[in-house]
Image (cartoon, one colour):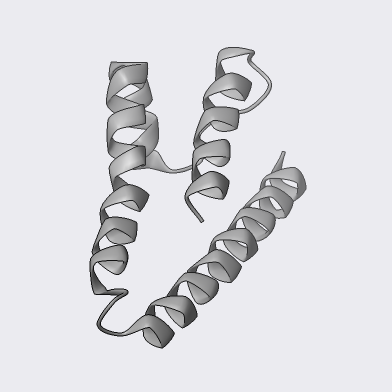
Length: 91
């Protein structure tokens, strides 16, 4: 999960800097307008904090954490695909 989120974050930044893509999330777009560091810090925190919490819970509820991570990964990828398709239809 961490790898997928990190690759998404870095590829988004690369594509935006190369003028190939735009940030469709208005809150993240504001951060990007401020600085790349602000974008990376907030975007990283949006997935690193929940993953850290789940890792703390793993010894207590391993099956719950496994299900939560799988569900989040599926949801993340689905949102990415839906968002990408939506942007292509609009643009």
